[in-house]
Image (cartoon, rainbow, N blue to C red):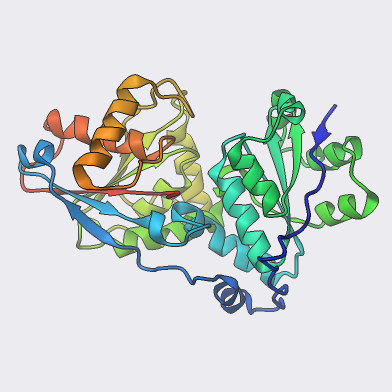
Length: 337
C-alpha cells in the first residue's frame, strides 16, 4: 500500500504564489518573469589557485552553476527550464515527478512550481518514510506546496509503466480532484533527465567553449553530462564522475543523446571510482577532503552528494597525472548552495 503525506498549505503568507502564466507559446517569457530573482546566466567561471593541480601544470576552474538561482540552482535550472516552458506552453497546471528522500530535483521542482503557480506532486522512493518526520529536504518540498506520495522500492521501480501513477493515486488517500489533476499532469522523470533536459544542458557546454580543455561533472542520471558533451567544441572533452554504483550510465547517456539529438554528440568518458559506496554515502575521507577544500579556497561548505565527490575525483586524477601539462580543467558545481 502506498502512503501520502498530507497536503501542506499551498504557499506561505509572506511568499505568495505567482499567478499561473498563460499558456500558448509564452512559456519562456512567463518562466523568466516568475523567477525572483532572475537566473544568472551564463554562470560564473572562476579560477582557483590549488598547488595540487599547479604541481602538474594544470589550472583548475569552477563553473558556478550553483549561483544560477537560489532555489532552482545549477543543473536543476538547466534541466527544469525547458520542461517548465513545455508545461506552460501546453497549459498544464500540475507537475508530477519522482525522487529519493534527499533529491535535489524534488526540491527544485517544488520551488519552481511555487513560483509559477503550478501544483506539484512528488513520488518518493521509500514507503517507510511516510511514518517518519520529514527530513530537511522533503520538508522544504512540503513547505513549497509539493504533495508527497511515498511508495515501496519495488513500486518505485515501476515508475516508467504507463499505469503506475493511476494505480498509485487510486491506492493513495487522494481526493478525486487530486487524482484528476495528476492524470493531466506534466510528467518529469527522476532527476529531471529527459530529452528536453539534455537539450537544456547543452547550453552549459556552449558557455564553456574556448574556456577549458576538460569539463567535469558529477553524474546521477547522466542528463547533465549528455548535454554538456553535446555543447562543447570538438577539441574539448567532458568527464563524468558517477555518484552511484552499478556501471549503468554509459548506456543511459547514449540513449539520452539519441533521444535529444538523434545520435552521439561530443567526446565524453566516465570514471566510476569515486562514488564512495553509492548515492548519499561518503565517510571520513570524503568529509575531511570537503572541509579542507572549502577552507583552502574560502568556499561555503561543499555539497556532499555530488560536488565533494567530483572535486575529490579531480584532485586524485591530477595527482595521477591524468591531465596533460598546460591544460585547464573545469569542475561544474551543480549545486545547491
